[in-house]
Image (cartoon, rainbow, N blue to C red):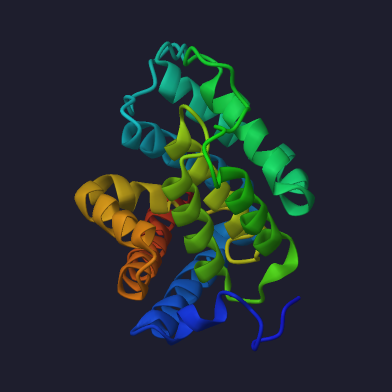
Length: 245
């Protein structure tokens, strides 16, 4: 792990409001894991969170949110998002040791029905290099707190759009993997994707700010994502309440 002096994400904690927002997000997600139903029955609540996250993520990429009563999903975006959600547990070990391979696998699942060869990043200049830098962060290149790492993973993948299709679904799935791997949300109970769907304009604006690389824009994106994590924790509480009733 990097020391605080050389850690590339450490300066982000000094941006206005970021340290407090990161702590608030961590606390909100932690408290969800301490709910009685999530101490033993977390598999049920995590499964519901996964489906809600997949539906919201698909909608953000232009797909529907409704799953037909017979369970047959014809829409390629929603079908891909659900496949990705179902596979996250299997992909997690690959994410932890070889993130680029994990991203390719996520794209195979997300883009299988979208008419292009899935799993291959675009060859535009800089994409491979930035994916390598991101992989370095994910595999031990930072000791920054979970919300910050997840925000950077999410923002960088959305900015790069490394694949011809399904970049949003892939980026949001990667953010869930990062949440698990950093210990922020080890049981994947939160649903920040719902907050992004409800605040689509704010989501897009915050991502644009991140893409500029300007410290103010990056800071605003991290603040937005921390707010989404808190909202996702509230969504998780609603799932827990339903499971307890």
